[in-house]
Length: 170
Image (cartoon, rainbow, N blue to C red; front, side):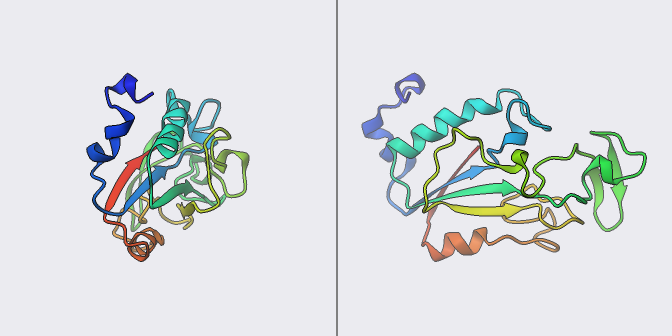
């Protein structure tokens, strides 16, 4: 597959800057964001074989997977806001503008699970986000307010592993 994008496998480490300790961060490759999911991204499944190849062909000192992990009463769900319609934007107290999403990646649901074809290892670190019912978190580090309401362990995990180079995909 590397030949398809014009990179020889033997030179990929040089291209990616192999000098430091590297982490691959895989963002939200979950059923609800793939074909048939409640918030499916067009061709979302197409990233899975590419991610699996990245894992197979390159050395990573750390692999982190972020996982949207919402409680059923999450503030961003249209179903939890009277009269809201999916994809409309509302002004919420203390939050500001918030898109009203369909229910997605609900804790312990099939939609919140990682795509079944995504290669995973026991050494992978899973960082869950969106766990605070009162604020949305679009970042693996926490909410959009600098961790004011939700801060994940991602920064601490990267620091503890001595990671110097981060590659984000998903």
